[in-house]
Length: 142
Image (cartoon, rainbow, N blue to C red; front, top):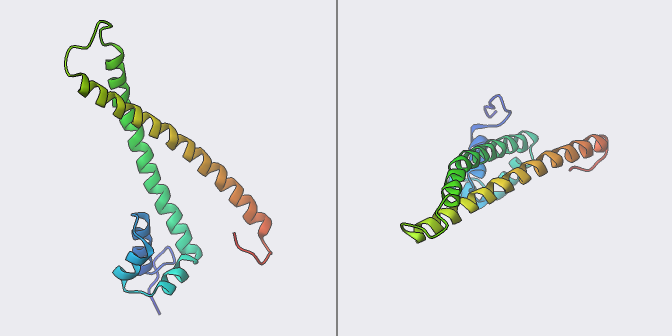
């Protein structure tokens, strides 16, 4: 019998979860773990595997969102600096200022999108939970 940890997954299954969360493809995971694609597909259908994937992705997404928020603080300083430039022209390297402003705009757009995605994720979880509770006792899976 295989040793299961507290999550109900074997060590190799946990490695597969970690690799998925880090962006590896199924082919790369099968090659790295020396498993058949059918084995990986079977693992991916296990409730414990699905839950571990959700937790892993939530953790990574939380890190990314927090990083974007941190970056927005310095970004607002750049935007403020650009806002306060003299009206009669810019003393210094205009290209550098334009690059900084473009990068700042991009970071702010990403931060706004991350908030939209987080909101969508929360609403989707509510819908999935409702569907799961309505589907209890039925023969189909969500």
